[in-house]
Image (cartoon, rainbow, N blue to C red; front, side, top):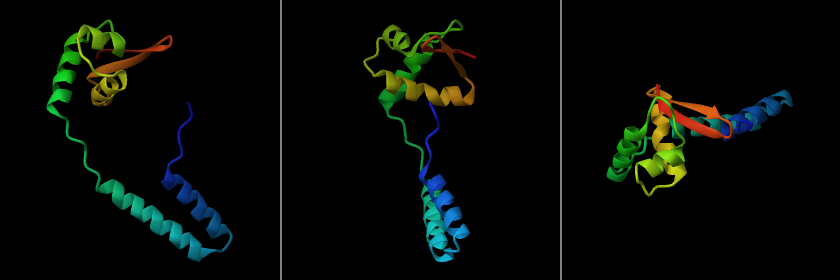
Amino acid sequence: MENKITLKQYFTEIKGILAELGRDDLADVMQSRIDLLDKKSANRKPKAQSDDDIQALEALKAQLSADGDTVTNLIIKANLSISTPKATSLLKPMVDSGEIVKEKSGKSQLYKLA
């Protein structure tokens, strides 16, 4: 899967093209759009987790092992009624911090203790 190009990247590329064409007035407009995106991004607050999310995460953590398992199996073992994308989003901060490891096994992603 290739990386998606962000709006900021598009604006930056357009600004460069406009500057090469000598259209500094339009390049300034693109810069102002980039500045607005930066300001919006800086003001973004992380989403607070609900009590249900915290309980689901604790249940998923309890099912993690050193052998690893798929998200679907973790959900079943924890007896949760949440979707696979929801469980994956709950586990993502732990993967980012290094508490758990996500590795590819065939077509599946295995989550296991670090």
